[in-house]
Every structure is written in structure tokens, then in C-alpha cells.
Length: 342
Image (tube, rainbow, N blue to C red):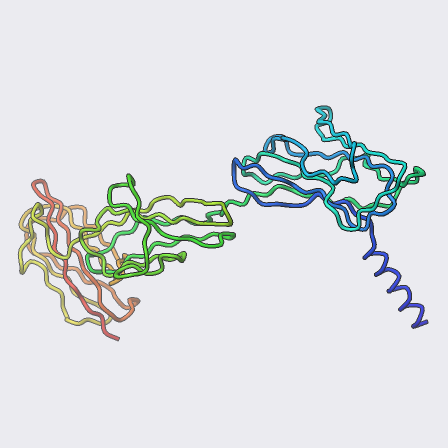
């Protein structure tokens, strides 16, 4: 019984390995490119006649021609049919030919860059010179998009002068990438290299540290590559806040903002004095420029104010506290560095 099972297994295995097949291959290309899609045969022996009907996606593929026909198929006719939409191939010979592992021909298309199937329609038949139909297995193929897919775009980022800025992108099929920088609102772009303040310029995570104030409103874009295909990310804008007020902004005063205790632990007290009525915004950012907390006080009267801030969930380390006053006559702010202990 055991020997019979082994014989059956070997018979099935050999039968599978010697199966006669005709295959439409699958290729990847960029949008707007010409593509050669091979139709190949394996273990196809003693062939005297061939009839194939091949359907393709006419929305995303434009048929151009038949290329690189195997010399054994000399005299093969090929026609583009509209009803149904398909390519029809016919060939016959009184002399048998063999295709042990051959390309029969190439289908030449122009693609839109969207994946499109190419498949056999009913009616395909391959026979020997006597007219006996051969047991052939037909495998469908496709012209697939080779463009890198962007699953998440880089986002606009705001950091404090001297902090670290991050830009990231993700793609399920990109092979490589590189980052570019624009200093003129996207008019021109410079390819970045890992040097000085830049790192990760050929990875999906670009880092800039420390960020100069002069980089305010610079833009960053990632170029993803897959073979000869490129995809560009959306540009992301870097905004840089100064640690000290600029000339066109007035400061509330050197001693108008107080933090206690210094350093602090689970709570900190913020005290400030307003020179006039206005709206107050308090923002706490990490050293990497990430917004940790933001408090908006719609209207506060002139004079002294006090806020108790719960910091129990903050990680130990340095932070920047930015206090902004929006009044009728001016916009003013102060920035101080604060430290949380364990």
C-alpha cells in the first residue's frame, strides 16, 4: 500500500511539472509608459494549431502592436476585435512545433498607470497537427502600476527656534526615497544630504536639528522611487517660533511671567501680569517642538493673573512655555524654558 501511495505521489508530481501552459505575464510600469507584456508557453509540445482570445482593460490600456513573435509562429494572424473587446490570434501548420520554455510574442500597450488585468476569453484552443485538442492550462496576467503609493503624507510642523523638527512619510511599496527643501515657497527645490543639521535625508523620517529661525516657512517634500517610477509627496511647511520677541512684536515685560516652583514636579504655578485687556494663549512645547498643552483664555482684564497647571503626566525634561497676549493694539509674547523633575 505504501509503495502505491509513493507511486501515486510521483505520478501527480510529474504530471504537474509537465503540465502544458500558456501564460500572460504580469509586469509593473509607470503612468504613460509603453509596456511589452510577454505571452509565454511551457512544456507545450507537438503543436499544430493555436487559437487565442485575449481580453484587456481598454480604459487603462491602449493596444499598440504585436512584437517579438516566435519564428515558429510564422504566418500567425492577429486582429483587434471590438465586439467583444479582445485580441484574436490564429495559427496552424502541418509540421508540429515545440515550445518547451518559449516566449510566443509580446503585447505592446500604453498604460495610464492604473493596474489593469489581461486575461483569456473563452474559446482558446491549442491542438496537435491531427486536430486533437491538447490539455493546456491558461494563466492570466496584468499590467500593474509601478508607482510608489503614499499612505501618509508629511505634515506641516511648528517648532521653537533651536528645537528639532521631524517630517515623515510612509509607503507600502516604495524601494527608496530622498528629501528636498524649498526656501522660496516651492519655486525651486534642493536635494538634501546627511550633513550638519540634516539627518535621515534618504529615509522616511527627516530630522532637522537645531532648527534656525531663518528656516521659518521653508518647505520639505519627499521623492519616493520604485524602479523607474517616482511619486512626490505633498510639500510640508516648517514654521519656526523665536525664543525672543522679534522687532515687530512687543514684549509684555521682563518680569511679567513667573513660574514656580523651579523646577517643578506634578504641578506648576504660572503667574503673569497683563499691561492691558486681551485674550491669552498659553502653549507648552517639548524640546522637539511637539505641542504638549494649550490653554486659551478668551478675555482677561488688565492686571495680575494666576493659573495652576497639572503636569503629572508630563515626562521629566525641558519644555518651552509660550505666553501670548492678543489685545486691540498689539500681539505680544514671551517664551521661557521650564524643567520638570521626576
